[in-house]
Image (cartoon, rainbow, N blue to C red; front, side, top):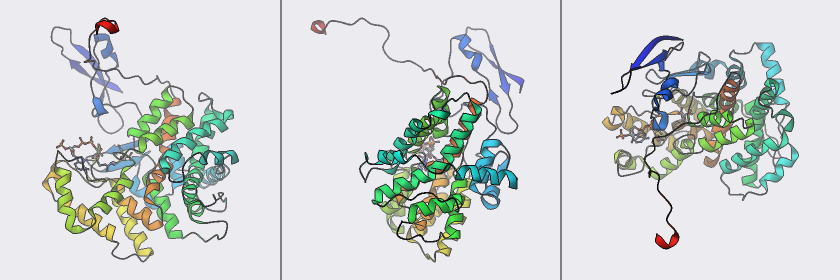
Length: 428
Ligand code: SDX
């Protein structure tokens, strides 16, 4: 892949030749691994210009608004595939045929239950604990139940851990919700699809088992697909870094959940609804647009902007379409939050400040409105994101461990004190 070279000219030093590596599509990279021989590091806080790894899983073109999973456009996967097919694709590199799909779905279904003792972990949390706090805890705790499959060097162990995590996340997410409601936790059912099963565990009770709306199940499945993976985002990079130390997969995914929680990342979907509630009415939009533009005001338009997309986020487009379908199906007309969101979207897109900075709605801008329409509380929105992104996280973890890798250990530009001697307390 190295067919070109870059030359680094450093004053007073010999030029340094650095290979340029070319991928199948997208930007070339300058391989700086040999730079340490010059006694220098690259400096790139926030990794604005850094490719941390080589990957074959997901490709994003931020200028064109393109998102491909193993080469397939996200729009086509959302329309023509389903979440478990997308999981199979991300894990294995190809969409399954009917036989492969049936086997994979069957395997996932056989791992949806969690150990009965895991329920006792919940009792340590307050009922009003944030669902993401509980998810961080119980997902990490899964390590304590699977001593038989924690050898990360064993491909079979890596495979069964991936299946267990994909299969159990909906069960755990629903358990978190039921715990917050004080309702009995529901067991998974093998006669339901992945999304139907999740909605069953969320909203049914032992007293009444209602059929799951196929429209809501399809919308839920589509939301899972749209959140499945997104290249080297903050939480995926966290999972890769944790995995590079040899940590077990459950601990790595718990680290990814923690990183996703932040409002600049996966926590944005919850923050969008809080923002819409705070804005309250279309008449207040101008005031909040001004706040978003004010450098002295920490307020940002949640659900807007993206490190990579400097054009529309293709997921937001599909999400908006799904939003319209779900609200229409539920007979929800003129949903005030959707009206407010659409007006905010329209005003921001025509405002020079947002246009100059290429700030468009991202995946989180409309997702919350659908989730709320489905009946999911705002505090559970990021849990849904974590549930769906687990396959992306574990696919990158598997990809990294399937070929030679090194522990991730960045360096720094040190600007602190040079060496000095400790004075005794009396003389300080
Ligand atoms: C996700 O990385 C991924 O792939 C993430 C994700 C995934 O699937 O994994 O796509 C999921 O995390 C989506 C993003 C969700 N977050 C939000 O919606 C929170 C609001 N967005 C911002 O916090 C921000 O846009 C980020 C964090 C998403 C991106 O930040 P960057 O790339 O560091 O860009 P920046 O903060 O340097 O912004 C550039 C300029 C700045 O103004 P100037 O200094 O140039 O004058 O744009 C401004 C920013 O102040 N800006 C915003 C803004 N986002 C950026 N101003 C107002 N409102 C915003 N939302």
